[in-house]
Image 1 (cartoon, rainbow, N blue to C red):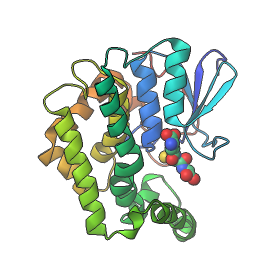
Image 2: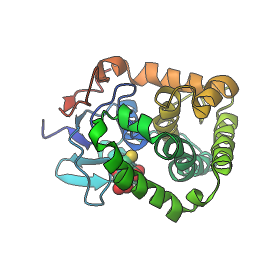
Image 3: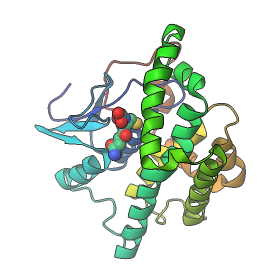
Length: 256
Ligand SMILES: N[C@@H](CCC(=O)N[C@@H](CS)C(=O)NCC(=O)O)C(=O)O
């Protein structure tokens, strides 16, 4: 790996989407939008805070995707939100945090881990022999997070309605615009893509969230396709074919 490149620590690539972590997909999308060179380390190395993603850049280690985006904007002088008004910045902030702290649990985590754990294990290519163990460890840990958050205390129907209400709000905010804040892509678009793309491209078959995006909120699915085509021309090449995610590093991914 080259020392002057940003290194993104992440999970192995997956077969339906370059990263099944919405936070990694958000960060990589931001790097591509800002035209910053980066390389991924897919060995599932967690940050000191115990989370993925995190980055190394010119001797600095930065953990948390939002702190990474903040740091990178300053470091490379690429302020994607520079033309937004203070009101637009406030709206962006609120929607990004809704997605990262609320919608994620009601849609991605509920849909993959709580309701379809066997599908999830298959999607991350875990051998069958380990399924029971992971149900006792990983699934239990994540349902514990949901309990502590509070959302895990609701019924499945209530959780779905929270997710749908959030997605409705996203669809309303986007409206007919190409990007969430207008004609130019800004930081909120990286975040929205990181999360909505999970729902559109990598959920169990006919999942209610995918159906919502395709049938009820087509502006959101068109947004995902637009972002994917513009910033991820190498999307298909990065997908893992066959068994097992790629654990090698891949570089120059943002050479568009
Ligand atoms: N706020 C963090 C959230 C990152 C996050 O939750 N990552 C998950 C993977 S998608 C993780 O590392 N989970 C491990 C754990 O919570 O134990 C960010 O924006 O980077």
